[in-house]
Every structure is written in structure tokens, then in C-alpha cells.
Amino acid sequence: MTAVTARDGAEGAADPGRRELCVWLGTLASWRGGLVARLVEEYGSVAAVLDRPLAELRAFLRPRRRRRAEAENGRTASGRASARLFDAAAERAAERSAYEGVLDAAPATCLPAVAAPGRLEVAWSDPLYPPALRRLTDPPLCLFVAGRGPGTVLEKRLELLCGALAVAVVGTRGPSPYGAEMAALLARDLVLRGVVVVSGLALGVDALAQGAALRAGAGSGLPTVAVLGAGADVVYPRSNARLYAGVLGEGLVVSEFAWGVPASTWRFPARNRVMAGLSLAVVVVEGTVRSGARITARFAEDLGNEVLAVPGEAGRRLTQAPHALLRSGAALCESADDVLNALAGVKLDPDLLAGDVAAATVARLLQTRSDDGRLAAVLRALDGGMVTVDDVAAACGLRIPEAAALLTELEIEGLAAVSAPGAYRLRRV
Image (cartoon, rainbow, N blue to C red; front, top):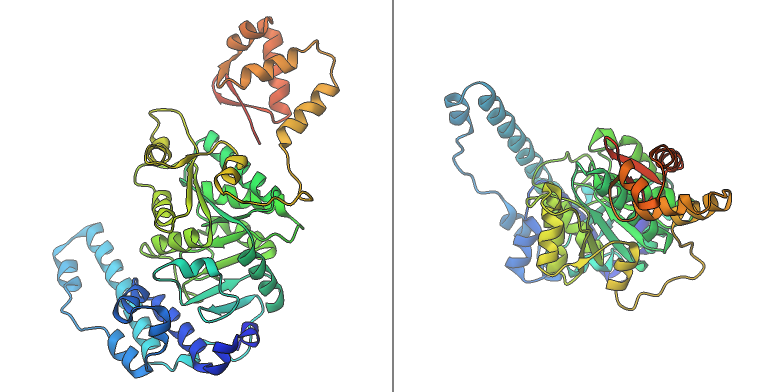
């Protein structure tokens, strides 16, 4: 048994098989999408499912044999299409085999005999199971949780998550420079205000938010949470291996899929559902109209959670998702304060750090200079949006070489960025 077993409540102690059943069903659900929803629809609730005899559940979950046409499709197709069909058929066969293997196994075999360092299996019946996930109609029956340290360390982080305000920051895998900055800015400022940032460790906005949350919360004990569309021990995508290691060290990697389960297309929407369930608000930074971030937002809406969207430039492809959400009633988000204002009744810890790093840098920069207000004027010009050197010179009454020199200085200080040849914008992180 894992360390969590020792913490089981009275219900778990009265029925020692209940926890094993949760982990067994959760492992089965790792290989068959929608399994928990089917069970709940059939029996009415998770509690009712866990009250059914094992033999009855096995009979209900036994797959019906159907004629399959993968081989025929593979023979009639050619070239790359044939290879894709073959790969998809092989993947389905492997998942079907894994599912049937778990189905025929004793539930106790899904739990390790000895607690593995850095791993927890948290069953629906455990006290440590996040209460926010119980709001889902088809909650994960087991959460597989990874982190660096013994079980007690992971349990403490999980307790912090259960008692903290959590916000998901999601968006496109290919953000614009503006979107990248906003993702990092929001995540950083939320952490500095005591909020747990939840994301999917995907490329782009998710990874940027997760990285900023790690840096802002380093050493604070406030965990950042990554929810995966694969087993919690599977690094996906591989390019985020360093970020994955950072989350293990400072936070939690969470999945409803069992150890070693590979990433697959159908597992990502399921992952988004868990992200929305763990969070009281979802912030969408950038994305197209078909973005996965909109799936996360839809799950949040279904749960009655707050949905916020970061506005962008009109007509841009990456602003389709946030603007569609804004039109349908999502709250506008320009800063962490907008998130906290949307969550009525939030109590902020006055001992937590807060404030804008960029503003503090500006103040220090201005204190070290006696430029008759020229630098402050250039900053004000940048605050209005993207500008050229000529625009800044005209707005501030400067010669073009002076304006260019001041913009270069701000770029070196990290307060301005070149967004197009000869055009500058304010960096807010």
C-alpha cells in the first residue's frame, strides 16, 4: 500500500476493498475513454458503483466482440494512409489488450506492494482526494500523483492544493510574443498572490505559465500543478523534460491515467476536464476557434466556474478563442487582479509578495537617471501600444537618434521589445 492508505477515513477502514476497487477501476479507465461516465450512468453515482459486486462490474465492463475492419482498410489504402491506419489499429489493439489484462486481474494487483518514492495513488474514497474533483459527474476514480520526495511530502503538497485557490492558465501551443508575455505575467502574479497555478504542461501558453509559476513560487512551498494527458511518470512532450523535472521538484504532476500510460489524442480532452475540475477559474490567453483551451473553458462553464479571456488584436487568428469567449460572457482578463476580482470572497494573505516587477524596475531605472523625464515619456508612449522610433520621437518631442537610443536602453533593461522591424512595444514581464 502507499502512504495514503494509512490516512484512509472511517469509510475506507470499514471497507478495505473500496480503495482497491477505485484504483482498479481508475486503471481500467486509463485504457477506455468514458468508462466512469458509463458506470455512473448505469448505477447512478460513484458511491453506488463502488457498492456493486466485483463480478457484476466485470460483466458490465467486459467488451463486446465486434467485427473490425482495420486489416481490410489497411489493404485497400496505400502509402502513408496505409501506414497511418496500421499504426492506429496497432495502438487500439495494444490498448484493448491492456484493458482486458486489467479487467481480468485482481484489484489488489493495481496497487504496489511497497510505496514507491515520489508516487501516490489517491483513490476517490481517500480523504486526500481533491474535493473540487467530486463536482465532476465522472470524476477520476484514482489520481496518480508524482513529485520529488517521500509520500509525506507529496501528501502535504496535495493538502495545500485541496485548501488553496487554484486557477488554470491555458492557451495555444504557438503563442504570439504578446500571448507569451501575458501567460507568464498572469501566472507569476497569481502565484505571488498565493494562488496555485494549474496547467497542462503542453507546449506554448501552458509551459510558459507553468515555468513562470515555478520561478515565482520557488522555495515558497506553494505547489504548481501539471495535469497530464498521459501517465504522471511519462514526460510529454519530451521537449518539456526540464520543466517536468522542475514541477516534480516544487509541485505535483497529476494524471487520471495509470503509470506508464502513453499520451493519446482522446486523453487530452480528458486531461482538460481534470484541469477545469481542480480550478475555480480558467484563464484563456490565446487560441484559435478550435483550440483545446476552449474545451477546458467549456468544462469550467459546466461546473459553474469562472471563465476569463485575455483580449487581443482584432482579426488575428490567435484571438478567435478568447474573443469568442468574451462575446459569450467570459470576464475580460488583463491582470491577476481581474482573476481575483472575478472570484468573489477571496481573502488575500497580506504576508505574500505582490506587485509588478516591471513597475519596480522602471522606478529604479528612473531613480538612477536625470534625463529631464525623457525616459518616462518614452515609457508612456510605449504604454499606448506598438510604436515606431518615429512615433516615439514625435510623441516625446525628441530627435530620432535620441528616441532610438532610449528605446535601445529600455530593450536592454527588458522593458521594451522589438515586435517588428523598427517597431517597439512595452514588455510587461
